[in-house]
Image (cartoon, rainbow, N blue to C red; front, side, top):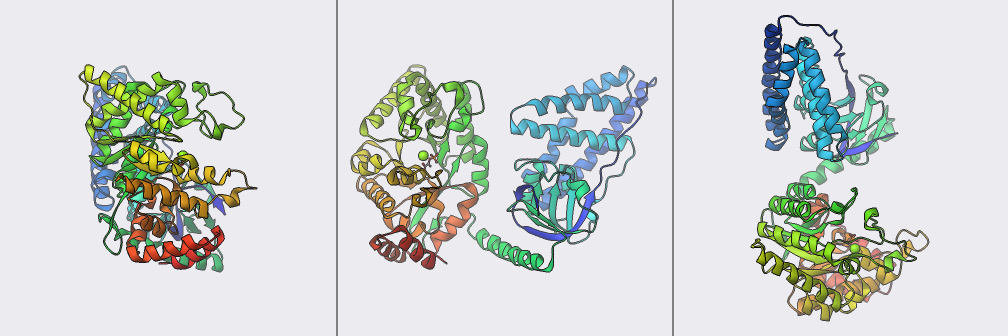
Length: 568
Ligand code: PEP
Ligand code: MG
């Protein structure tokens, strides 16, 4: 078995077609008739644009408008006046068209590749694609016609360029394997849009596999099996039909509201780490964002993001979700999340130490920068503030006082923001769950963080394999914490959501429905599964299952019972 990066879900079984790369070598020449050479270059660009327009059109039909934009983006890039002007200047200086094109494209490729940002790196792949396209035309090379590949083909390439992908007929291509590219590369995006299973970053794939060799591509696990035996073929054929049936079934839950079988409505939102994740959340039919983990904006850099940088990030997410809720959690660092430039001291017991809201309230200037940025972003959507790791009322009051201080400053600056921005808390410590009746009077909403709540309730570190058997939200004590939190929130009339992993657990869902949870916040790919799961239960059935589970004494009993009744 060969392992790569799982980039597009599903199973493909078929025969290999290796996309060979033609040599783009040429001997640079010195040009005397520079006008004719410029004309030759412009002619090649014109042909490239025509080809690309045709590919964009093909992609628009097979994948969608957004995917076609990847190709039209190539046209914009090659038409960039600076790029074109510089190439023409080099030709005027005596370089041949091939060499002038290569010099300028390589400069951009180098510049984009050096950037930290994944999107910028992707730009480098786009310029490489443009360079190959125009150079091939200048050298008179004909590209392989992927569109003519026979049914049951698994494409293998060093890099799956958007221009090759655009030629894919999704009825014939059953799998994709490449040597390069990650989950966020254009190859991956296009493979997902075309719903073709893809495994990327398989070292030496183009030389490892031979034309007509039989392979299985598992785009969900990132595994590739070459020359499978009969048993493997049978196992994966079954997996493939199960996957197709499940995908079809889930599609019925796209674009509909999240409702129980008896008609109660729920909010089904997503957890995100970066503004770009909000796009995925919307694509996956999320109804907003229930948790924006802002610490990711602070990681992988050498200094704190400024108010302006944070404002831009929050505003971007708000604009992407277009008026749907966007719950921004203030900085949750410490514990397992270290940010070197913040100078957090090494602690004996970091999970019990100086982290999250505790750290922020002691570093008020830094905290105010974030609060001001969130407040300013609230002018662009339904933005809400959420404090992490709350354990007592003072933290909520103190945090809210800072919000008021920032509001006063912004008012004085005539900056726009939502005066009534809701301020809620995460209930993820045992202290907060026990004190939920009091905290509910001080908060506009609760979101239960079962990842931490389970650990803190069970006094158990999930990373420690000796005690991880205790780490389960189905532990009777954790269930009681959750139930109490929801009941206290409801008694005070505030919404209670859940953004911990348990919100997407099919065994937990009937219990959460019965307790009265109003919002489920899950990872984007889980949205349709959770919506389907909720739709299978009537409130009464959920209440009966819940009553039974709450009468059981152990986690094992609850798990055994739920694994029987939750098969729906
Ligand atoms: C949680 O604790 O459940 C939670 C959602 O927060 P995080 O996983 O970011 O700690
Ligand atoms: Mg947490």
